Amino acid sequence: MAEGLLRHLAGERMEVFSAGSKPSVVNPYAIRAMQARGIDIRGQRSKHLNEYLSEPFDYVITVCDNAAETCPVFPGKAERIHWSFPDPAAVEGDDAKILASFIRVRDDLEAAFKRWLD
Image (tube, rainbow, N blue to C red):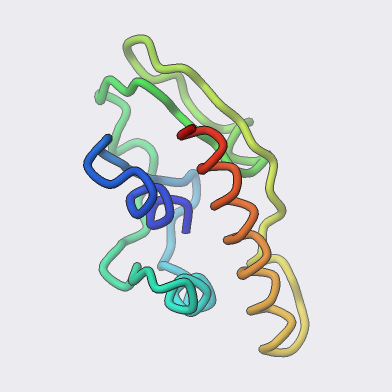
């Protein structure tokens, strides 16, 4: 969701990449939460952060505590930024409860990105 949101909000101002320490598939609830916001992330894929170890970044933003702990050092001057958001995929319950957790995190991520971009 973070990749899709930042791409949407930043537009042509920057290139956006995302990766994780335990990639799998793009969560269907993330896709639904983003569709409700009008952003299509169905074309994204879950990537391992090792794919980007040789890339020089200006910023490396982590959005969960596990990512902050396992994020490697990237080459260059990358400024590290950490925001601690709960993992919506860890929420248990019925469809509505799980989707609501993804929507809540989506909205919080969007607010954080807007503040950061300003």
